[in-house]
Amino acid sequence: VQLQASGGGLVHPGGSLRLSCATSGTIFSINAMGWFRQAPGKEREFVAAMSRAGSTTRYSDSVKGRFTISRDNAKNTVYLQMNSLEPEDTAVYYCAARSNPLVYSAENMYNYWGQGTQVTVSS
Image (tube, rainbow, N blue to C red; front, side, top):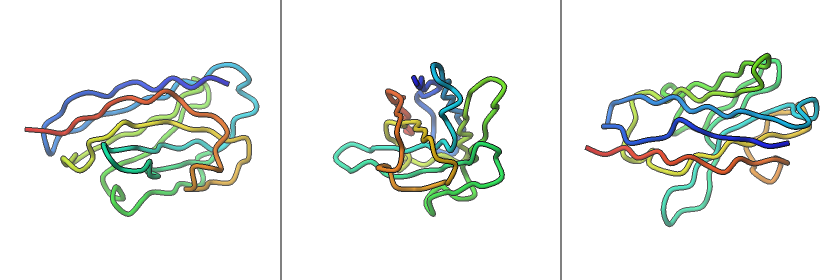
């Protein structure tokens, strides 16, 4: 399984970005998918996750109400719509997938990882 994240960039505070994560390879082994991020000098942290059917979602408190995770299984792609971005959202964002359908926030529960895409929020 390969994950390819894209959509990062430089945005002003209050702006929006949409990240995409395209999957390829053994697609049938992918169930829940999620997004994590790592800011400079900090550990990687959970952002959002969604079950394969989309019936279950989970968000970190820091992004709840501003970010929305979604997925298009026909396109084997998961998205992260990020609104009202703040400088504190600056980080490398990683998409991740797991074979199990349960949605977790712990990164060690994910089997597959993408390469990351940089998001910078600055005026």
